Length: 265
Image 1 (cartoon, rainbow, N blue to C red):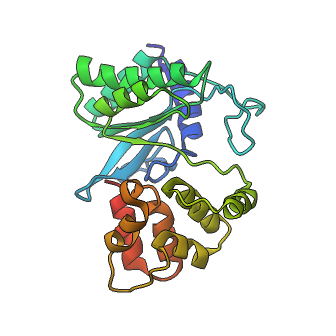
Image 2: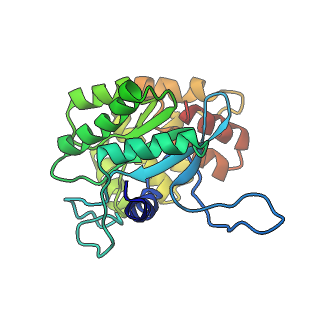
């Protein structure tokens, strides 16, 4: 393994990964000093929380920041003049295992730009998780970002190896247009209501977002399950981040904390 080249890739792809939501904190830079304990480097180590409340360290990287799309909101967009890099499947596996053996991390967060097409990209992510589980017998935490447009078969296979799958809801800086579109068509599906609530949060329309998320039910004694689940059914986990944001911004910190904790499960 070419250590210098791997380090260069890690610096590029860890920095690009910081824009992916992972329920985690970002890395920071602090050099070790004589007489003091420890240091910190921004090379992809972040933190997340398990269901039982433990804080764990994750290797948070992109497989590649090459992308066929040119989304204006994304730092990895095709037209952006930035340094590009790509890990091979085996390089990600080796990094994860070596970091784990040195007790640097307890798991992996892996996302990617879309190269060639969605299925090709998703297949590489799945191969990483599969090799870790079946060849390296890695039982640590794995979080994979699903690639929009990937086949159901690949998403299903990813779920066989990963502890958590997530998908980004991108509004691309056009929250108001999306808000007007959804309001104008009176969409009532759980997915549309979730997106409309997110638009309201982005536009600081907290009262309206709260009403969408709760179905107009305002009751201090009712739990999240009593309010959100009847509105969203099987999709109840998707509005959790927006609910938590609204609650925290409107001084309902206990309910906000409840939503944040549930979104990590």
